[in-house]
Length: 410
Image (cartoon, rainbow, N blue to C red; front, side, top):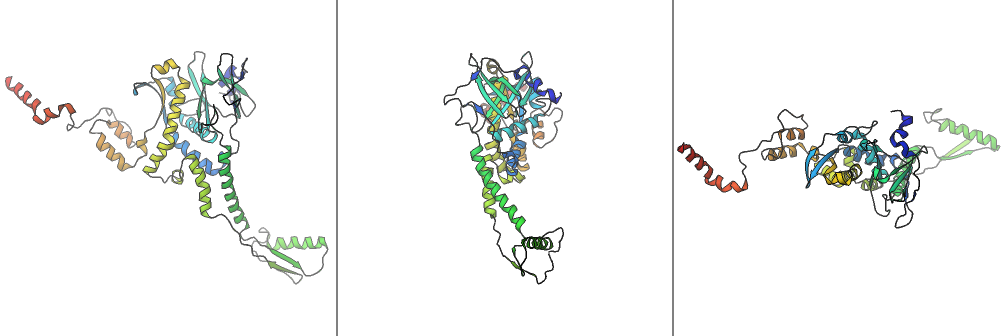
């Protein structure tokens, strides 16, 4: 795919403005436009560390096209859609990269948009994350909602709203979009930046010479300026005087001024960073990778799992018609949380679940990171387990007596 033609290849004739469209009127007025927060939040190291931590773990999610009935998964389909979801959503991204990108957009703009590209037969051919500068909502005479995207280079595309995946965070005040985070996040970023700036200034000012130079004779202004510049070069300039020692004669006198440099202490820096951590629901241990099992499970259940539910529901609605959903077609973003527990916990789980037939041999091997083996999908069950309805027969040996009698009769 040639990059210069990518816009046309994605949107086709949808780049042309639709006719007979009017602005979508909301219950609270015409607030039908959304502009992502341009406060360069993602350019802050702390924010990027938080978002990157979430995106990296979310990229382990496994999106699949499944068919469910009565809450049970009947089968996982081996079709084109499953390939798009789990391997290559579009020609430019792998599935992990695709998930990372949409998760980053979700946490930095509170709105996630994915365009579902279809061919002439309405089959899905690609999934494209949309990085735009503005989106506006319109409706036609049949009350069909459209989304008009404006991109950074000025291109515009108008697509039906039901052809995009839209996931919202902090979905409260606005009727269609997640609440902008400009005010809340900007306050924390400003505080953190002030702390960092203060520390940088202290480092710059540390060891800086401060004082008053008194020339012991009357000088013209230009001579005084020249003598001052000479003094600065001799004493302060690290290029011309790396030793910090310079001679003086009896024509001038220097009096040092002692100024105590102050800065924010460690507690204030921690407070500023913790505000960012809490906003994204992460901790310092998660960011630097020193978390334990319980800490990760808490992070998974509070951040990753709710996000997986949102993604599953949003992709299901956008990718399948109501009739297809009625037949049980769904998109599920799954992950095996057991992969993140300790080895001791994995061993205990295998010891308890293998004999009960809940796990297969390959399930247990996957739990420890090993490749599957032939015939490993067969379940093994301990003979110590019986049906609850057969307990009395097992204890009285009723079936055993019947078998003996049968053998004697023979």
